[in-house]
Image (cartoon, rainbow, N blue to C red):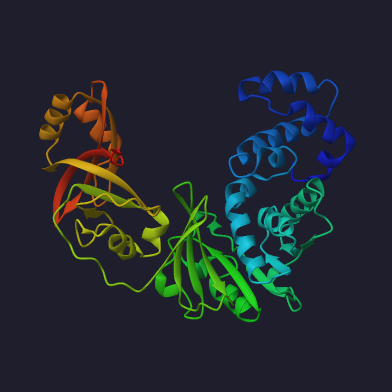
Length: 393
């Protein structure tokens, strides 16, 4: 069903309530029962919406997801609510009270902005998507702050708004789009729209080349729960050229200081795995300085140090063994240590973790972590486990 309207009728809403929480294994039986009294298309649409709501609970609060409306693409491409709320706080800190949200999708970012007290014009050119965003504003009681408009964003006058927020489509007919100029609309258009506004935030893929960042923009990479979610180009923050990595929850923000690449040094007692946002933001040098360490290899984002220096920007591991890459030696070591739970991490290695686990066949009551990487250019295996703070006296 490509029309949301039937689900917004009393019959549609009653069906949505009835199918809430339906398990996949029960869908056929539920659909068969409901089709005796309701149109088959409407029953299918309600069950489809229930499935989308269940998937959306990973990004939105469950209480919101149960009331909202979604499209398959909308669930896939929506910003996680925690990330959207963080961005909204940054805008309110800048004194922003009104935002033109261009390419608003199903309205996830607009909802966060409105909940922060910001008046939002939410624009999307797709009729169904705009209808879903409008229904979500109504479902969450935000219609006083959210105006949803079906239009081509390139034709919308954003004058009079304190800020623009642009989230270009980064998927095409063949999947993800990696060239910023292949976004819809292109990044160059979004940058020009940002330059015309007092403030702006452009959401882009975290893999964007650093050379694509305009000199007047502040670039921020955001992770949530250890997963890198997005990069944002900020305009009008008073920090042109700044680079930062922000980790949620928190937030905790690491600011770039323009440090040179760390030296390569022998593997010490501890190995630090920087958060993905730190790596994407090219701020591994800042972490290395913080823990008093260096790199295991000039091309690998693993930091090593002799001391344990807890930092929110990297996960520390205590290294017990360093081996040249050799599966037989690793298997023998794991057997000797009675390791049955093996975590495999890799950086700079072509070996897949599942393949390695299958070949070494770990068995036993103990756990270990193995890093497949390069040390000073040589394929290497580092064995250890999560570092624990030293016990007090």
